[in-house]
Image (cartoon, rainbow, N blue to C red):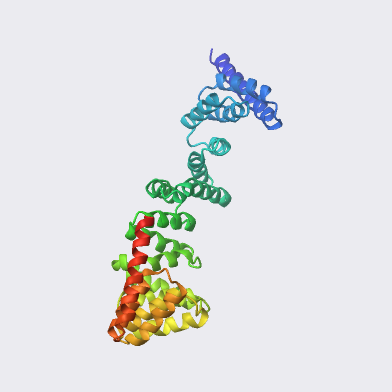
Length: 334
C-alpha cells in the first residue's frame, strides 16, 4: 500500500511541476491563454504553492482581469511570504500595477533573502523613495515619514532614505529627528552636501546636537577647501554655540573670497561682527546682504538695529518699515 501512495504523490508533484513550467514558458512567450490554462491547473494541483499564484497574478493582469490578478497576488503573498522567487514575482507585479509601496516591501523582503545581490537592494531603496516622493512634494510629511521609517528599518544605511526621512521630519518641524536623520546620512555618505545644508538651517533648533554637528561641519570644511558653503556652515555652527567669533569671522572671509555674492555669508558675518560689538562693520555686511537678497526680512531687521546703534536713526526707521512690509507679505502668502 505504501508504494502506490508514494507513486501517486510523485505523479502529482511531477504534474504540478510540468504544469507550472508550461505555464511559465507560455507566459514568457506571451501566450496568455496557455499560461492561464497551465497555471490554473498547477494552482489546483498544489493550492498553497505561491509560485503558481504569483505567475497567475501577472497572467491575469495582462488579460485585464484586475480583480483576479489582485486575488492571485494576495494568495502568493499569503502562501509563500519568504520564497525569494515569489517575492521577486510580487515585486514585478506590484511595480507593473502601480502599487509602488507594495513593490518596495516585496523587493526589500526579496533583498533580505539575497543580500549579495546589491542591485536588488538598490531597487528596493529606489522604490521606497518613489513611494514617499509624491507625499513629500504634496507636503504630506506625516504620511511620508511612515513610509520612510519603514524603508530605513528594512534597508538600513541608505543615504537616500535617511536624507528623505530628514526632509520629512524637517517639514513636520521635528527638528531633533531631522537632525538625527541628516547626521546618519552624513555618516553613510559624507560627500553628500544636502544634509549639511539642511542642518545649517536648523542650528538654533537643535542645541543638544550642536557639538556633533559642528564637528561634522569642520570635517566637511577640511575635506572641501574650495567650497564656500563648507566654510559658511562651519562658521554658522561656531556662531550658534557662541564660540570662537574670531575663527568664525576668518571662515566667513574665506567663504566670501570664494563666493562674494552669497547673501547668507554676508548675513552671518554681520551676526558675528555684532557679537564682537563691531556695529558699523556689521551694518556694512547687512547692507550687502540686503542688496543681494532684498526680500530677506531678517537682514532688514538686523540692519535696522545696527543703524540705531551707530546713530543712523532715520535709516533704521526705513529698514524697520521694510521689515514690517516683508513680514506682512509673508504672512499673507501663508
